[in-house]
Length: 521
Image 1 (cartoon, helix red, strand yellow):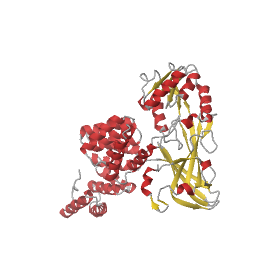
Image 2: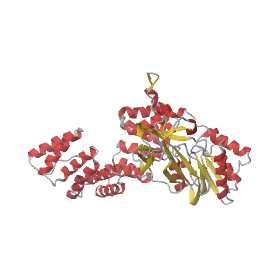
Image 3: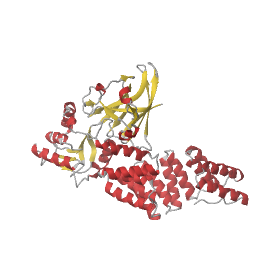
Image 4: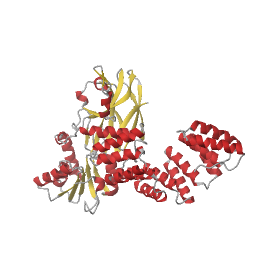
């Protein structure tokens, strides 16, 4: 609740009320000017310092807001609302641990403070600490049952945990309370998409964008669900002899009669069969697709392994030790990859598996991956990335079917001009995964200095990965590599960038849990 300054002449009180009206109406510049004028007369007033810090924060100037909120806390250290809002501004700067401390202090002073529970839960969610965040959001709703932001946040966490039915139910409740919540519509769309209700998911994403045209996640998710009309076939993978041989050798090196193997993503059952043939004591494999799981069971039986391999028709984050597998796995095998490495969810999947499904010291296949990239000029594909005019017609509406993150190409078959040598861009150790990173807060992985090897227009970056199955066996998805079925990923830049041979190009690398992306600094 906004309070008046606790002292000052009646003229100042009237000015403050007028400033608050501007503030609540979203006229931030006017409110800031009036707060500043009032602060000259009452420099130590906690309410004024608080309000001024808030309006600057709401204008997106988070660091500039900090001194005012810190002074407000000094002037009134026992005010929960000020402490909570200082935590909000710290969180906006990525200073999550400091924010948590201020939310905790606010809750010490006001144990039933819904806003502090909600904001602390949001910070914990940003950090990937979903169980703690869930508890805080539930506490917020206990204190304030119609707090739709907390309902929406709980739905978002249920999505992250793969509990899409429960997420859809919770988000439906949030939308009954507030039908104009863009975040709830977006998260409902994600849940519906995962439940196979793609038409309803598209409606939810479009509704979110109608409410908030700049909603990043809704826009990206809509494009992703629209792109699912193109199937991903298993046949090229099965035909990839280099991949099959590499996995077979890596599995045979670590599996023995005492091994308990978990294979995430059954597919045809080939990797599970390799593990059983290598002599594993127990093999459990999970597959979310019911038709694939049924076919895999038939394949295992046809090859005489039907009684030695357990196929569970679930996502790996729905598995439970003692229910779906007798004991934690000592060997974890997976190939949850795409051309861009992360697009199939390898990081969150393995993060969950390491925390809940594996024994200490579990052997991982693959162990790690290294991403390599190259700057290129590729005029033919640039013409439709994005889709604009074709043969004199405006076809830009068709661009919504294009996946904006990256496409897949076979570089050997595409006319292009390399403008740099390949360079290492990113690496990941699957035994020691990076922290949770989202589209809102991607991980900053550094800037690479790349030397232009030819004159031309930098239009895209093409990238691929080396998959380290163990310390000795490495397979590449790059041109001429063993993983021929993957192809390479290509990301087009927003604008062409002219370079001359010998120029230094600064390539910024970032990642979220599901993707790696590049920009030119």
